[in-house]
Each structure stands twice: as structure tokens, then as C-alpha cells.
Image 1 (cartoon, rainbow, N blue to C red):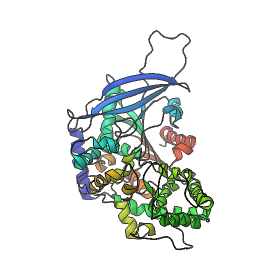
Image 2: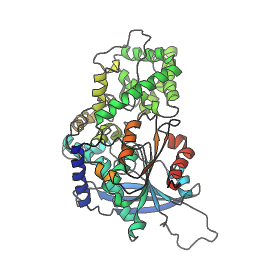
Image 3: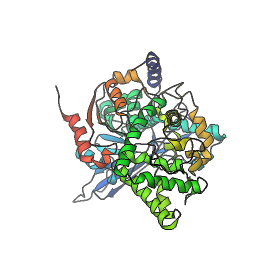
Image 4: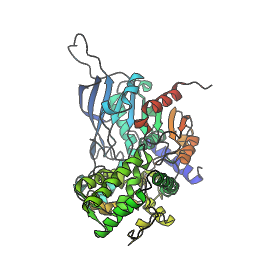
Length: 486
């Protein structure tokens, strides 16, 4: 439901977006090579403002890979043309905080090329090769924690959209207004970016494809997690039905951690605590996630049974289960992606809601799981907790920054509900009914708000469908695009 206040906010952001002219990015370098496929991959670096409100100020670099099909010519040309005139489809990765894999390894590439597009895999600012954010990089900023907070505040959806517009203007310079528009494809958080794009700069878009990316527009972080936890509980029930032996196996591992003073050192730094162990349930939302969690628990249990301690081989998977150490934006800005405008404060929403609902015994101060019990310890899902900034080596120095970000109450606008309601850009969305990460009911509300959207819904595929069920998902999306209903 759209409140009067959010309508007023939307009108305000519409005025701001309309007034802001995005300058074209500067192309720093462009280099092409041929990869197996065969495909021509062009690697591009761009220079854009860090803050679009200060276009003459500090700059950052963006990285993208453009890919087209390639045929070996019978007679090689004297000069090879690197620039294609095919319409662009821009892929926006999930996260937040993740760069793109190489085009030849991406499930979208072959289908998009067959459909007549060239694909641009553009790393969001702060990720991949786009001036990536890290603890050491943030420490180079003058001004301490406050400067780091201000820098990180510029890493959300709204500025990613502005980056895309700047890059679009650079790559389509000289084209007509219609030719210069491009298509975007948003997976998960990439869909959140796409809805911001539709809100702030729809003039740059020809069409939008979404997979698991109908963001909970108009919902606070608290509402997001209040809706999430019932789904997490259902996934716990399903997990322990499949692996009932893990009720005791998980407790065995947890008791061992407690016997070591509540913490086991991890090989690459940081520590494994019982709360951190129980967050590996983040994988419950993807195909094969149950089996990966079970294998991880089995490795830990087998190590304890055979040696009485946790071997390096059993601990290493815990370090990479969630990639907070290499993709810190995923942890430090995760709740901020739900904050739309002033007075929308995250305030560690996931942690607060879990404690209010008394869901996880391991979240209680000084809790102990040492007692034998037939009750399972419950895993969390895609949740961010303050204790991450005590147990992940890359996050530990950023604890103060994370607390300040959680208290920010003057976020910029990322969605314009008024603009979405009068949208004229065709949108084709795959929505997963049993999606652990993007609430299906909220996704339906967004689809009802968004004018001109066609949706394909399924309860047979999880959030990872683009990767695990590529042909089915992409086939359904392009059928939405090509089928004529009226």
C-alpha cells in the first residue's frame, strides 16, 4: 500500500532525478580479445564521479566486459572493428557487493547473443574491478570513520543507476535517442537496481528483465525481516526432515565450540562461534543448499569423531560460506538497500526482529547449547548480525562504521513509487514463490504497483534459477516479451 507520506517522498525524488543531468563517463581504456565460444570480449574501464552531486570532485573507475559473437574471417581485415552496433543488454549482478564472472561462464551470454543483443557485464561501483571497497582501501580515506561512512553511503542502488546512465551515454554517443536506449537484466539485488533505474532514469531504458528481483518497494528493513523469518523457520523444518541426524550433529559441533571458550580460530583469521556456525543456513534458499550445509556439518562432525578437534580441512569451508571478507559491501550495506529516504533507519533490523521473536537461542547473551536436547538448533537465513563484525577479519576493523551506518536516518531515495505506477518501459519478471531471499507477497505488491510488468511465477525453482534452470527461466522471460496477449 502506498502511503500519503511515501507519495510525497516519491514526488520529491522525481523532482531531484529530473533536475540531475548525468554526465557521460570517460572511457579510460578499451581492449578486445577472443575467448572460446568463440566470443569477442571487450574489456572497458570508465571514469565517473564518486558523488554525482559533485561532478567535478573525486572520481572512481568502473569496469565492464562487453561480449558479442565472433566468427573467424576467411580474409582477416586490415583493421579490426572493436565497436559493435548491436543493441546492448546490461547485466546487473545480485548481492549487493559482487562483481561479475567472465562472460563465457555466465548463463545469460549465449541466450542473449542468440536473441540479437550484445551483453555488457558492468561491475557495480565498489565491487569486482570497479574501484572495489575493502578495509584497507577505506583506511586510506582521510577523516576516519565518518569519512568511511560517507564513502559507503555512495555505494547503493541510486548511484549504481547513475553510473549505468553515465556509461550508457559514453557507449552510445552519436546515436539517436531511440537507438541509445538499452535493455537491462537484473538478478536478485540487480533487480532492486533495475527498479531504481525505472524510478530515476527510465529515459535510458528500452526494456527490463528481472529474475528474483521484484524488490519490496515501500517496505522497511524491519518489515522485510518480519516477513523473512517465517520462511527461514519452514526451511529449517525441511532441512531437519531431510537430515534428522543433524539435530545431534549440529549440537555436537556447537558443544565443542563452547568447550573451546566459545570460539575456534579459523585458518585465515577470524573465529568460528556458535552464532557464526548457525548462519550457514543462508544457503537454504538455493538449489542444493541443504546438501551443502549437511556436507559442511558432516565434515565438522567427522573431524571431531576421529580426532577430537576441528581440522583445517573441516574449517576452511566455513571461511568462504559467506564471502563477507572479500565482498564487504554485502555485509555492511545489506540492510541499507531497504532504506528509502529520510527517517528510514535500519538499526540492525535483522538482529532486532530475531530477538523480539525469540527465534534463536544462540543470539541470547551468555547462551549455552551444551545440554543434550532433542530440539534442533535453528539456522538463520540471509541475515546480517552485529556479531559478524567480531568474527570476520575483514569486518572487525569496521565495527564502528557498521554501527554508524545502522543509525543513519537521512538516506537518499532509491525508489519513486509514483514513477513506477506510471511506468512505460516493458518489464518481464520471473518471480519465485518459494524464494527465501525476496518475499513473494512483497514481490506481488511491487508487481501490482509497477505499470507494464508481465510476470512468470513458479514454485518449482528457487532463487538460483538463472544459474540452475537457465533454459527454462530465460525461455519463460523471452516468451513474456514475445507473446501477444491482446
